[in-house]
View 1 (spheres, helix red, strand yellow):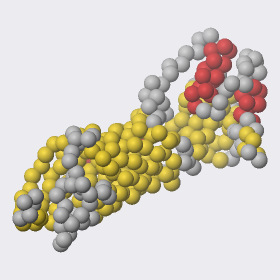
View 2 (cartoon, rainbow, N blue to C red):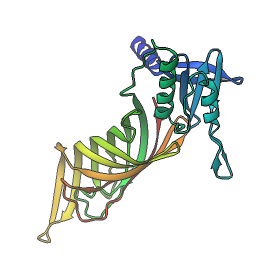
View 3 (tube, rainbow, N blue to C red):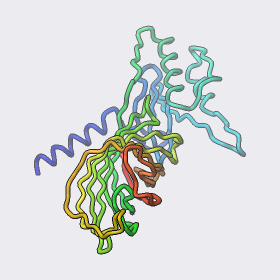
View 4 (cartoon, one colour):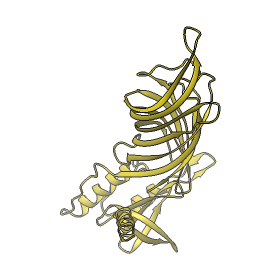
Length: 289
């Protein structure tokens, strides 16, 4: 119990590093300090929206870009101009994104304070943990009647929010459950790479590549072989595979995490299918750690 408590405290401490609470217009936010200097840049993802703030002296001002009748007002540029009036910096090309704002604030701090230094972050790892349920007809195994079995499992995702925003590694455990029509069960541990070809605050859409997997299957299957005779496969065992299997998925922002949908193992380069159309869907939820 003491070890679990220690682990919990450690995880909370790691998560909170670099974050502080700030009060802006009577509201309290937990923000990350991106640049610390004469002009300080603060930010965080709040209610699935990236929010940016400038701190100068004892004043914190939010940077906004509201939309009116389809046109963006770019109020943040006026704030940048007024906060940096003593340095006469151009704001026309500044975008309301973390890299663009960071470069602008660093440039200002260097201009007003010759001793100012700033190290650009090269990596910022984030992790997500989720669970899912689904169904699969296991087309890469013998399945005489194309029976669809229920599945469930967990995902552990690692991603970088600085330089590799569109890329992620996912460790997945997936369990298939047998039924009376198809006595086959399978436990699979796999390493997956995901490329997010659509990425926004609301939704990410990705291609999933299963790089390597270890499967342990148990079966008692009666089927008709190529000679037209009844055959039977029984027993259990495991094997290591490098299937190169590809699927599609989407993460939809909700609360402190994402609803995740996926169509798994649509095609696999390193494995033979049983020539049935692949049915392997999952639905789950994952949250930010």
